[in-house]
Length: 104
Image (cartoon, rainbow, N blue to C red; front, top):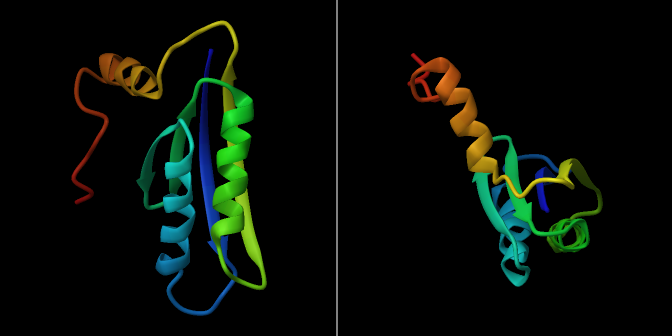
């Protein structure tokens, strides 16, 4: 089984959130998960949903603010071990090219 999730943890503060977001990302190091951070959140892969929830909770608790906003979107593939990279590769196969653009 593979569990893939998009996690977004942010303090509700004025100004830059990057220092607190870095604490949330760093908290994931204590868990058996693979992750990749992008401008909208962090994609996390785990072998089971319990590990995923524990990692997400640690990331949430790592943020030092009076108010913290956390969003967790989970894809729990219970009958498959497909990795997140395979999802992107499938889209790229249909596109016939990379799923990335240069933004210009």
